[in-house]
Amino acid sequence: MRRPAGWLLSLAALLAADAAHASITIQDDLGQRVTLAQPARRIISLAPHVTELLYAAGAGEQIVGASLHSDYPPQAARLPSLGGYNALDIERIASLKPDLIVAWHSGNKPSQLARLRSLGIPVFESQPTDFGMIASSLERLGQLAGTDATAQSAAAAFRSRWQQLAAQYRGRAPVTVFYQIWSQPLMTLNGQHMVSAVLRLCGGRNIFSDLPQLAPTVSMEAVLAADPQVILTAGDARDQPLERWKQFPRLRAVRDGQLYTVNADWLNRAGPRVLEATQEVCGKLEQARSIAPAP
Image 1: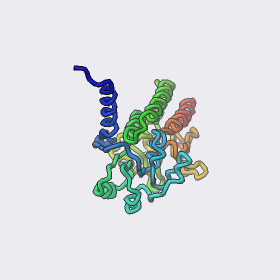
Image 2: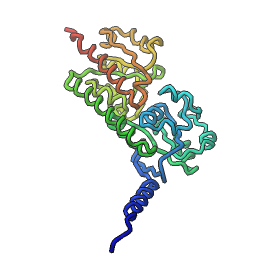
Image 3: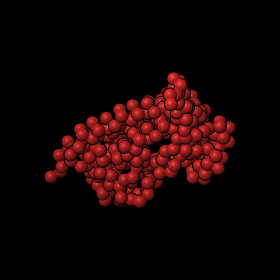
Image 4: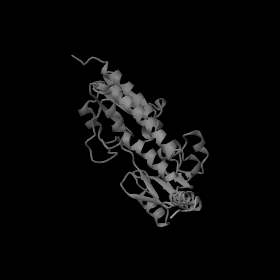
């Protein structure tokens, strides 16, 4: 039986229409399923690193609001502000009628995320802890936003530079590092944080990597006992956040002049610019390696 000449074209059109209306299901960084009936057109970002990931994935035009300090790329600073990452304006978020919220698992309050979910809004929780997860985040957010081509290109470029850096610093002599995120109380990050992934790539060993808390409080005595070769912090070097360590001239990092402040936005945000931070951190650790050990 011969079919009408336009039959194949009609079938193709129907299949294309079905594909366009097919739901999208992916897993977020906690392994939770996030399902959208169609690509998101009104996206809320609840952390600066999320905003950077969304723009890099090609979804910048779909963002209708973001948390405070979402200032990169420059056009992100013009987005409606929805409060701090841990003190969100839930009413304003709801008024923007988002069809997707991308949250920060360890930064946003669980009670506020639960409230947003109770409104029927899909929530993707972001928590990249290594380079591979950042690349995967770009791809998954691109799927949710319908910007797959841009997202896949961004992820490929990210992976390429990551692998170049990994090859460049592979096999370097290990350097012990204390990473300070706060001075009073003295706080650091454990081995599960993205910052520790940066240190590992550069051949650094986080002296507190084994602690169970993501951002533990530690004692000055514990740092002195570990005697790290390098002390790092992120922020503005003009603030001199590491100046207090100079009261301990026998501390190896102080004795050898290995107290460094690196770009906070690059290192503390688990987004594409973490590769810039990696280049910077690796350079600091190379300087530490160049210092001959004390006799």
